[in-house]
Length: 239
Image (tube, rainbow, N blue to C red; front, side):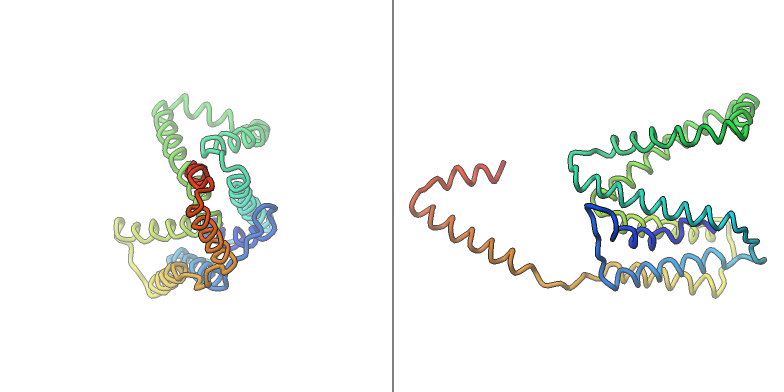
């Protein structure tokens, strides 16, 4: 099972501790995330015939990856929030430049880099596959960063999780896999999670903001009657 399946929950929890965000989500969004995660887990494990073999090192690595991934998404949202002029291209470039030095030493020490180089030399078509995959990854990363900038890290994590569910569901029709009751239960929970996410918060409008807007409108009306520089202020607000 892909560990990114449960990514949405750590992202929501981590958002409460990131400086500049301090996100607080309504209770129905937590329930929606839990339903979505459980549904996707059930759907993914529905065709598992044998129990997986667990390793302590593997579990620690997966937990570390989830924590760092949830931190990264919220950190990117905080950067977009505190620096609105930051573009998705700049964010993608900085993330790649920071991550590249961390990947190269392990690849060189383990010899994986040289194995990959020799394999590409023996099979030249791999270069074309790598170029296509790099282009697709670029489009996907820019799309994810755009979602983070507009909707936030938690909503983006839910969208990517739902995308995994749709991909799995379509694979059963394309490759004619049999659907079981467990698949149906997983799909039902996923649908419930998505529908619950669409439910509005139901919070009343901010009364202080309404009072301030009303007072500002009243002041502008009085100044318009007296002709005291209302046009300059309106032009400034438009700019």
